[in-house]
Length: 124
Image (tube, rainbow, N blue to C red; front, side):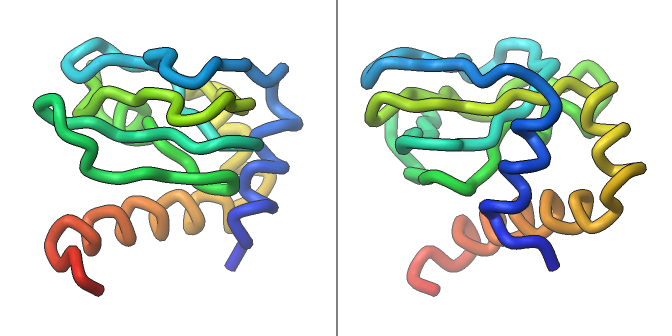
């Protein structure tokens, strides 16, 4: 299994990173989404109905749901908790990364699974 840092390293090879200041909105709940993100540096809050439901840190990925659903919309609002450097990946680059490094897809699925597990059982 890939480690989170390796997952973000794969992201970095795909595109130039984006930078956000603390408090910047990266995307909003309900908006269409065409890219996913990997956190190189910093922390991001995921907000649903104006409440922080999760804070994710360097090595984590988010926004992947919009790539795997047809006409995917954002399920949360992502807000930079700190100054952040984010790697970005669109569907074409995602498919290329999966083809070149199949374990990358498993790491993304693991990330989704952990996030779902956290919401079902918040104390685990």
